[in-house]
Image (cartoon, rainbow, N blue to C red):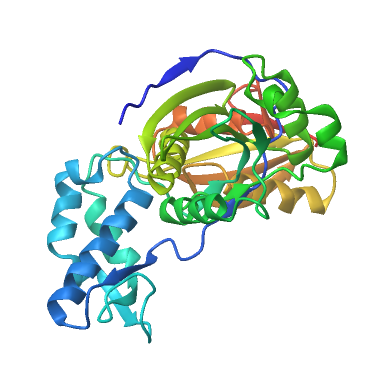
Length: 350
């Protein structure tokens, strides 16, 4: 397998309004296949389940390279809160095999992982809009369609679930098909696909080309995020492996931005003054927007003076990174501080 990463400095000025982040439920829950009901096979399956969880929350290409993650794996049973076997056999597996659902104790697991130097990514994750083009062995290209491409859709769902990445797909209605063809999506000039993505208010956009050739799959990916595009290639492998690694590139890219390194900086607190608020609805709307900023743990409204609303932000990490995240969100504009006032921002209108 060969993965090539290219970073290009492309300004995506039209993508200033981010899509709402999605809160991933059951982040610390997964299912795996145990070869039998025997305790040794069950324990091995629980370790396999924990490896899936660590890959979902640790922002690193190889979680097992982290000594703290290896410690967790050695004590996987200690971190399992509950587990349950499904009843009945599994197609394509030995008669003794059973599917095992495992729920891990997130508080206990995070207490250990805070001693790691690897960034952790919590439940709040932005949706990624996926424009996927499938190319057959004759070179014919078409957009991915769940109705026609069931195996691809299933592999995408499995890869999305494995890494906790919420995906969104374009409608591909008459309006889009009249203005956008597969070759337009794959072009080195991304203006058309970015323009078509505006209707979805997408913060994270993934463009992919998936090719079946000689009994295996190749793929190429472009990921547009934070006013840049990063590209990677994946060589011949199974469909499931190809899509899993393709989405893992997105996971790592977004995790670099949203993940927080534990215990590098102690929890902090700052007060900001916010202008541009019109009415009580904006007060709660601004609080909701602030709660979705990476690194912010809690938001409290303090007071209002001369049309400036003061909020206290409790956060994890360093203040400089938090200020960058506020401005990158697309919802807040930094303003010069007046006198000895706290940090000042303006709430931007949609």
